Amino acid sequence: MPRGKFITLEGGEGVGKTTNLAFIENYLKLHNIPVSVTREPGGTALAEKIRKLLLDKDSEAISEHAELLMVFAARAQHIKHVIEPTLANGTWVLCDRFTDATYAYQGGGRNMKNSTIEWLENLVQGILRPDLTLLLDAPVEIGLERAKLRSNLDRFESEKINFFEQVRRAYLLQAELHPNRIKVIKANQALIDVENELINVIGNFLR
Ligand code: T5A
Image (tube, rainbow, N blue to C red; front, top):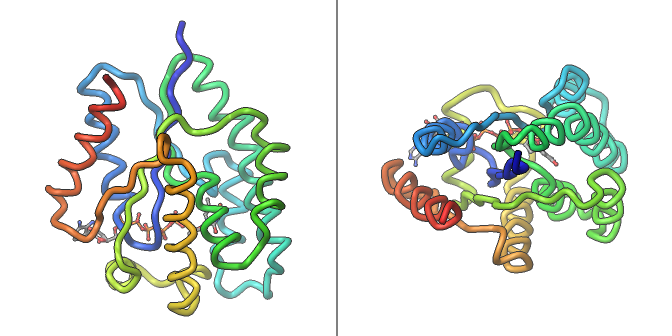
């Protein structure tokens, strides 16, 4: 049984990841590809508990190092108990955020060194990297407006605008560093146009 492919969906707050996840899942299923959808931080019972702690805006101030280690602790659980067994079983994994989010939020947003993140990435993931990453990109104000309409703001969403500008820049830098893996999708257009761009990129990947 061939190993499944690992696809990740990335982008700043409110760019439409959750909205487009279901669309991508259906598109893959239409092509008879077995796919399992998951998310980060989260994906296992323990990792979901860590997610809750990370997003709680009423928690005590979380240090940058604690935040980084919590993200990777959740990821270690997720990889061992969900991602690796699913891929080994021949099922594709479609994940809402992965380590590019760490480079964007903890690296870009919190100014943690990329070399530190890379060290943890190698420790926790070994050789595991996504086969394809879809980066939804939109001006920060648009994503935040959408996020505000949707629900109460969490601990990350309560950050200042400069934080999100740094997150966006770090994401785009990741795309420049990994042009074969990371495909940038324009997210500030009508949903149907976002979907068409996704079909284009995923169609090329399937071929
Ligand atoms: N985090 C995560 C780290 O700091 N480090 C890490 O390593 C990882 C993995 C997780 C948080 O954790 C941080 C980053 C995050 O802050 P999350 O829930 O995964 O949080 O991320 P959010 O960005 O908060 O997710 P959201 O659900 O807010 O945003 P989405 O999923 O991008 O947006 P979505 O699909 O919910 O859409 C928002 C609204 O916009 C509308 C939708 O209908 C919805 O109402 N919309 C559109 N409207 C018009 N045109 C379009 N094209 C639209 N697309 C969507």
